[in-house]
Image 1: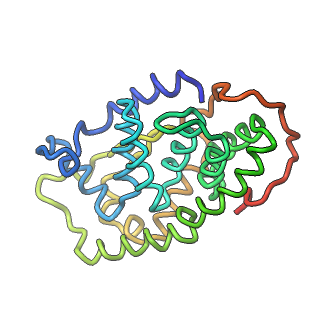
Image 2: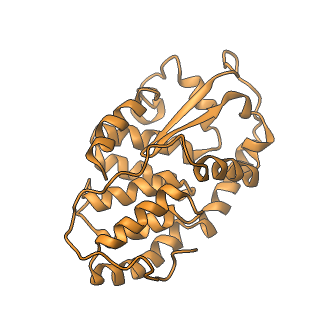
Length: 245
């Protein structure tokens, strides 16, 4: 990943985030936290991504990985992509291109261009041994975090929370535009959505996510990876299991 994207771009993204998560840090929420509380209700994919990216921006890589895995557990593709890049660059973990590829392949599962581009760049830089191992370790990554299991898990979470009611809270500004950062750009949640069916119906929520991440523009362009390993480039038409899951 381009070093410029991992420093300056992330620093800019974090300007949109609240400084502390009260439950996480044991402190009182700041004045803006109500908007985030409303956006995060029943949506742990967004919540744990937010705090994972914050930890990543502070170079607290061990903590970032824990939080991003929680978001990934509920099918958050940007979090899965950032986990991949942490494995590729050895941030908080030993460098491991096989696991990096497996996670980026997972992030690309829904056909989001940013992640497909990065996945192919990984493949071109990998040794044959790493490629073979990536296909092996990918099975366990998909078994725990793939959409086949993550989407039902998220839908159950959403259904349970929606039964508690989704009414507005005193002091909440329904016109707010809540910015959730990722390594690849800022996802904006329109406050008017927070009580809508689209936000509380899993299928419609995923359709919103697809519209955001599949459409070009509005994201940080995929930059060049750092040379984490020397390897001959592969043919562009190389095939491997699991690419089009």
